[in-house]
Image 1 (cartoon, rainbow over the protein chains, first blue to last red):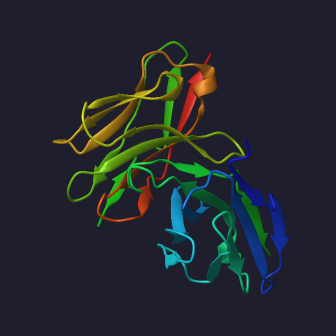
Image 2 (cartoon, one colour):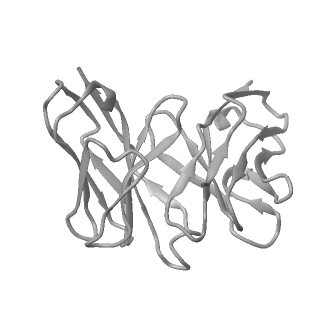
Length: 116
Length: 113
């Protein structure tokens, strides 16, 4: 009963380095999301994928790219990391049954990323 | 544009006492409303939702929330708090016509034994 799995759990990068955060879900959900969580700011949507083959920008997409590799996997890439991207990153997925809006999102346990 | 506000950064309550965590929202039309809980070093977990119907919704772990359309509020409540309820709570709102869910900044709940 894995749900949403994120790797790695922790990472430290130097400014300018690149990295890909991985996310996989085993619930056969169509929709997947990437958020960042910063103190006092709640969760902010970076990118989302309504279904396999589609991706769209969220509230804070600058400095990030995503790939919906297949129905299960949705990765987030930082091409040139900056200290402002130090955060906790969460991946989530949702079940489209009954309309995509009224079903809750299921979250992974996050990737804690520090950029020096 | 839709938004959600959690006016209290922190709520302190004694074990056994009732608790309320406040949430107000702004969205045109009828919203979808959610509460999530986050424990340390974990992702958010769904507690309950309001889509339509009865204004009082019941969720996991004895929590409930009351939807008040006139006050645009969706406060989370529990009749008797437990120390294990101590966590970070997030209110979230979604416009049914869109796709994105907006989260509040979170309220940290401390339940003292």
